Length: 58
View 1 (cartoon, rainbow, N blue to C red):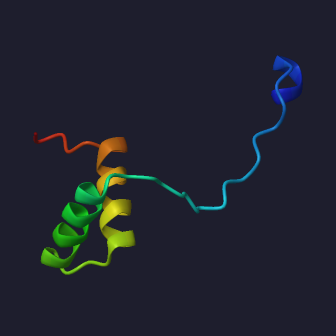
View 2 (cartoon, rainbow, N blue to C red):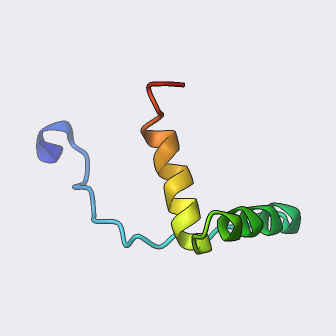
């Protein structure tokens, strides 16, 4: 498919993302993660997944 469209093949992603965010956002999401009983990585993963698959009830 990539060859037919002239695009290079998609390479696998590593799963690592480095972000630069304002300190107040970092503090806020760290507090939200702790309040939900999750580590920061799991909280961010869940939040980003919710954007990709929004709840049909909302």
